[in-house]
Amino acid sequence: MVIVQTIEALEEAKNALTGSIGFVPTMGALHKGHLALIQQAKQENDHLIVSIFVNPTQFLEGEDLDAYPRKEEADIKICKLAGVDILFMPTIDVMYEEDELCIGAPAVRGYILEGEKRPGHFDGMLQVVMKLLNLSGATNAYFGKKDAQQLALITQMVKNYFMDVNIIPCNIVRDDNGLALSSRNVYLEGEEKTRALCISRSLKRATNMIIAGERNTEVIKKEMLSVLEDADQVEYIAIVDREFNAVDNVEIGNTIILVAAWVGKPRLIDNLWI
Ligand code: PAF
Image (cartoon, rainbow, N blue to C red; front, top):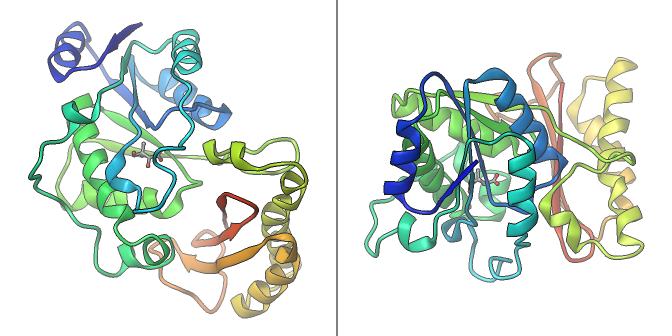
């Protein structure tokens, strides 16, 4: 594995590659969820590039940019063991200049749910993903369904800007208790770890209701809210179609149920694709 920090070194390392490139962009603090993306990318491509970059432009004022978990040494080991060819770990100076041209999230889909709670987050996320996709020269780029809205917006960006890369959605990875894996789970302390399980439990309850024939989204959301009483604050429960339009009825094969809630220090998100 080659570790590169500059654009020049990345270009040079890429010159040695022939065939398809799988790319997994990350902000580090790698866990089994990232590993699943890396393994799938490894399997489906001739070469594998991973990036680790805690992107400042997608953090809002007062968010956890400085505290965001950084585990460089462990991440490098994981990437080596997973058979990564190039690990790109740029600094902020490499990625950004002072007066940048920005791209913006779409006015509707980019400003609901996560976009409403974290205005500006998706602008910064899309800006860096555009850069990383261009730099990696990826044939296929892998993103987790856990960040469902992020995934939808990246897919839209690739379509709207006619970018030559396939965006591959990957399933959510959960721990044995059902908690969706996230780098921010390290913020959970003591009993919060147990309380956080109400989030995946609420999605499980929704699944059971749908299996039993319930389709009305208001009925399902009301029941989910009662399961979420262990959370400190529920920011939203949303039931949308794959285009992120709110729906009155669940349509099998075209629905996503999303939850965002605070449990202790972290704000956690999870979802279920029906
Ligand atoms: O999902 C993430 O970890 C980040 O949003 C991403 C896609 C690496 C961009 O910084």
